[in-house]
Length: 170
Image (cartoon, rainbow, N blue to C red):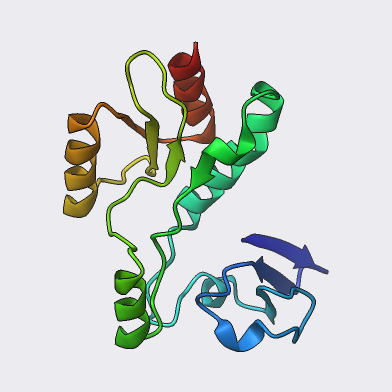
């Protein structure tokens, strides 16, 4: 998600998460698979349908991480480093049940690096804010991932994630 100040009066919000806003997917607006909205209130832009604040700081760190990968790791197979879209809000119980049937699992790490190194099958990266803590589901995912020879790290910045990836790949 990108927020862009327009004349310092309006805030433009762009997202490609069409699962949250399916009514805007059918070519209505600039993005075919997303939505664009304008608001004068930044807090309105940060609030999902249930009234909970989104963790935009973690999302920002994750976006920065993906921007830095091509700079620091230009030859890394890009399809093998990916985000897991398990977070976010659900519009209703039906949508949540559909995601569950499709295999969406709570607690899965934010990023998976599907490259075996140093006896590990993969690297799982979980982004947290400076004061953020893992949920019980995330702790259970970490336990299961590590028991199957996957490396799991919690990072608090994009640069820390890049450093963990560098250590893992070296």
